[in-house]
Image 1 (tube, one colour):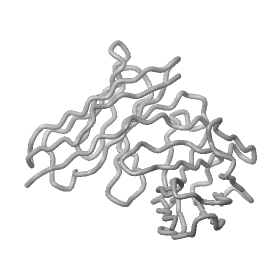
Image 2 (cartoon, one colour; image 1 turned 120 degrees about the vertical axis):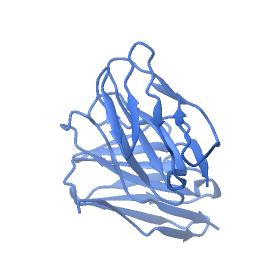
Image 3 (cartoon, chains in turn yellow, cyan; image 1 turned 180 degrees about the vertical axis):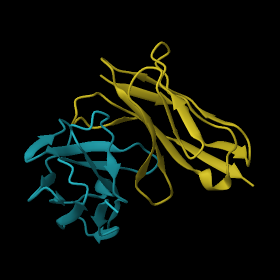
Length: 113
Length: 114
C-alpha cells in the first residue's frame, strides 16, 4: 500500500536558518503530494501541493518539488521565523478522488529566537 | 469565508456514555471525512462519505458510526467511548472532481473520556 516517510523531530533551528524537512513516498500510479501544517491545538492547514512530476508547490516562503525519480517531496524554506514553529505533515493522495490521505508521522519544528 | 466548522472544540464525556461530534462545511464539497488523531501521531482515517455513500475503513471499530443528513453536515457518533478513544477528531472535505484531491480540515474536536 501507499506510505509516506518523513524525518522525525523535533527539529530545532535558530531564527533565519535554512529549513529542510525530508519526505519520501511509496505509491502506485501518480499520487498528488501535499504538505500540511498543524499549530498547537488546531486542525491541519494545507501549506502547499503538487500534482505531477517536477511541479513545485510554494506558499508563505515554503517550497517543495515533486521528484518522481527519487520519490521525494522535501519541504524547504530559506529563512525560518519563530512563527513557523509547528508540526509539519507530508501526505499523498492516491488519486482516487475520494481516497483518504496517507500521512507521514509528522515533524515537530521548533524555531528559537 | 468558506470553511469547515467543528463543534464543540472540546468535549468531555464519561466512559461508556454516547457522544456525538458535529461538522459542517460551506465549501459545498461532496466528500467528507473523519480522522482520529492521537497525541503526537498522524491523523488516521476512520471513514468518509462520498456524496451519500458511506465508506468505512476496514480497521475502524464498530463503536464509531457516522451520519450525513445533507451535503453540509456530518456527524461522528461514538456509541460507548473508552479511555482509548480520547483523541482529536478531525473533519475534512474535498471535491472529487478537483483534480488535485486536497482536503480541507476543520479545527478539530478534542475528546476527553473520564
